[in-house]
Image (cartoon, rainbow, N blue to C red; front, side, top):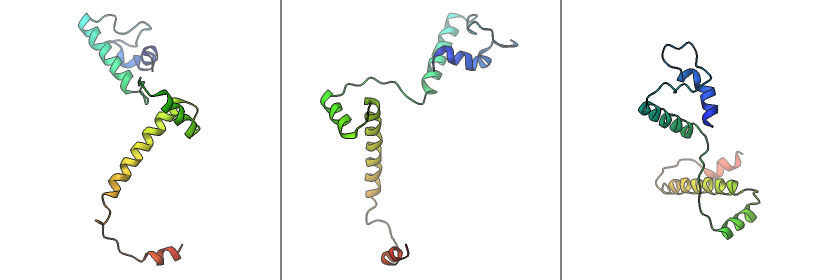
Length: 117
């Protein structure tokens, strides 16, 4: 979300105390330098944390990316990275589940359950 979009969407929350409605100009023009700085930090933090995606620059081996694109059939590098992260998370969760092997007590007849399906 860009700053202009944020200010348009949330300008009613940024109006000076006692104001009936926010003006079209920036609501922070009347602030001191320190207040302006805090306002900018607040806005930037809010813009950064309200997004559902994060912009990140990473260095990836070109051949590795080409192989991943070819192997998956995906069209973009972003899709490959997201699939890789989701796969890594799923594998780590499976490792945690494997730690319970032999530690959980199970009662029942597996053959009977299979025949009931």
